[in-house]
Length: 185
Image 1 (tube, rainbow, N blue to C red):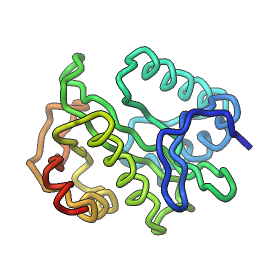
Image 2 (image 1 turned 180 degrees about the vertical axis):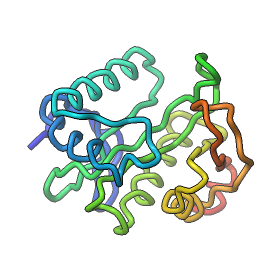
Image 3 (image 1 turned 90 degrees about the horizontal axis):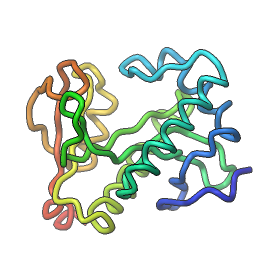
Image 4 (image 1 turned 90 degrees about the vertical axis):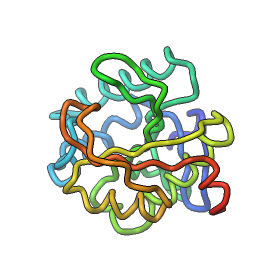
């Protein structure tokens, strides 16, 4: 059980916390080695060691940015089981970071269809709007990723357009402005 990692936020069922690369590597490997999970992702790992290095890289990147952004573990409060990852981070335009922030998530297959992505995303959006004082948050996904498209609609995000500005491929872009969020909650 991992209890010493910094908690970002929580919901009734979930804790959003920093990764513990050594303790979480096996569960991250199970998620990022599953082709159903990585179908629309660049992130894939072939071993527990690769998963640990991936988590170490994420922790290091966001510690160095020191701006409140991150890629965090979504864990079940009751068992501390890692269900997935949720990110709130600056988007890259080519190789440069922009001032635009993206929310995104990956869940292991056994956690699909239980509302975890929506629940975690609502908590992280609240963190982004209230703590980081972001005026708008974007979500960018593969056009065929209908599961994530359903989540962004449940979050009240509006489709902006298709774009190839980020991640070197054509993706659907959604946004949620803070004033729209405040009216909805």
